[in-house]
Length: 170
Length: 457
Image (cartoon, rainbow over all chains, first blue to last red; front, side, top):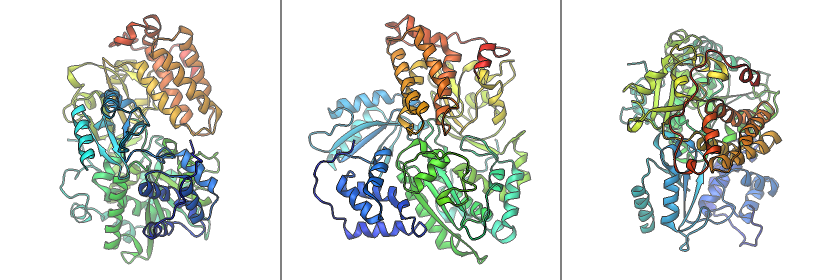
């Protein structure tokens, strides 16, 4: 759900704005709204989530109404409308992965991190959630971690432990 | 060994780079098409090849191309559908990861055929690594003169861009994809007008799957007639099959269409049989949306003849005893898998992914999920099974896009073939929580569909 709470106003860095400019060039004159999805990905990579002030800024940049940004951000599952952990472990929970043990992996992650699906660990490092098919069914169970969306395939409890420990040390 | 057209060089080190790709014969199709063929010749070759859309619907690609409107002074677009999200399907991700130039080359040839000067590859947002791979490949192609202005001195211009999605299965539907590419919610459009008349930005547009576009490369290299010699009947060429589930060797395989299903599952060249020495219980042959089939009907028709991997053969028997090739997402279930649980899982998927535009789908998928949850977790009644049937019937065919049908078919087929397992969940609610039904006494192959099943389809 959209959080309408007061947050600090956002100012985009010139490096980020330069990336915006680059993307908008891909579309014909007057069709700059097409850049909305890629821009929101960039915003989320920068801030960890898409806050209302950040979305307002995107709307201003693209010269569209803020509601046009909110309705898109709330439709697609990849945009976080609330702050999440630094690393969000997204585990595929759809049929083919479940045939090879995805549910066990999710239970293991829940126990290892000590937080429920969607919650953030007290140190702010981790969140986890089940997501729908990640198109890696032959290599399941799988999970991905944004903003690079690196894939981790053929998961076992040991490899998940290793992954979480490695991320903690980073 | 069967012929490989797309994955022939998959194991060559560095095949993801333009240099190695060219050493292995890459970009010949671009040279041939742009220098020796007219755009109409290219369309003609693709028509002759009999290539059918590899995304799931199986509509002839050449015919789709010939529908493209060509009004004066209006740009035309080619959009590649790389929003691969059908559960069980992961061939496009595999192809883009390992041989990105196969797609780039196909995009150049196809864009030329359609007269498009700007083309987009719409990749699902979760595939950020693949997006980076494609962007690097595009840069390489541009630096070598295969993209940009005046390609190979022929005067043809093409800009190619990669567009990330935002995580929505529905954007695999072509009009939803176009909405998303325009920066909107992925709500499918009402057709007509079809994208060939009014697609991206209201201009004539063709949307093709990754594999279809990559397949134009061997078609141009060898000629449409040569391509049409591979395969069986109207199922020409090779097809990438994503094999997953309880198999010894899951993964992506390129098959010649017409391969017996039994050989695909059990031979060492392909999946190598069922994992852990178990027996096959059921398969979903073409991605989660197609009807699930019990093992006996997977391997053979109801009349006992062997079933083949082709559009026609998998559909033999209609929905009563057949299924569909779909996107080629082949999921195998071993004897210890629970059909009710899997059907619930798929219904949860469709409920989650419904865009919410049409009431039958928005509400119906939620009902399917809830009833199946009740059955799976031991609270179901016999009436619930009938209710489930009733709800899925009211979704199918009553929605703007095929997501409604895709949600209804897995439920309908699970009840059709595994009703005894649903009933067992009702009669043995406690037992069903700790054990599985097992291999099932699934119905003996039926010679012809019983009347009541027939009338329901």
